[in-house]
Image 1 (cartoon, rainbow, N blue to C red):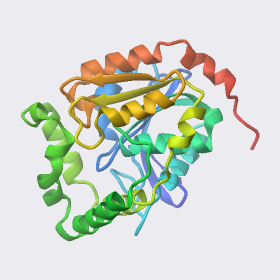
Image 2 (cartoon, helix red, strand yellow):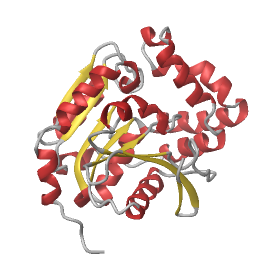
Image 3 (tube, rainbow, N blue to C red):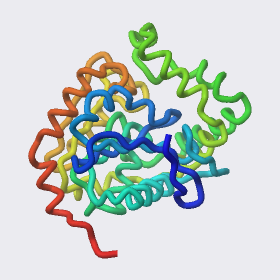
Image 4 (cartoon, one colour):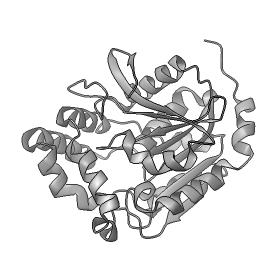
Length: 278
């Protein structure tokens, strides 16, 4: 597991695939880590360069407290790409990772070839949902991630997936072994995250919005809000999946993703947004 010193912490990441191929940056959600993309790595690593960081506070990366803003996580990724000499990429993010993709678009639109946002929400928190996040942060610190996982895992995946050990077991391991301080810090940061709905209309790269048909956290109308407001965006609803369609319906998710990536527009966009002078 390689790591780099990025902005004061050790950032763990994977770098798979042939040199010189198109980079894809996979950004995990909460409370997961880069291993959630295993099904995509197996499918795509012969044809693309795959960059998979563990976000600050998750997996093998360093933890900072008491609060981590999504902007901070986005900056970590930018600095990692600079260290790896990657100028342009297609960014793929799930849930919290999708919100980080939108922060990246706000910061470095010239470095996007395309974007894929999975089961995420461009809107800011309401006062009520922000309060729930802050309460969840305190609960995680109090009871730990094993108990938190036991009490909440059923919300992340569809009912059928709960009975599928190939989904349930790696998900349980990811969630239950997440550092509680890191998870709580991210919740506190997300409680005050930006509202990105106004920038959706300005996204000028190919975009795919994916939603599981049984997602508890971000049901299909929330995904449609993004696909309706991003010019030319595609919407893919994956039947029978919950919040983690890449794990629950790996074959169908990979098919939709590969179809999107095969669009020549994802290649041409790199010329439209050359690396800006720094």
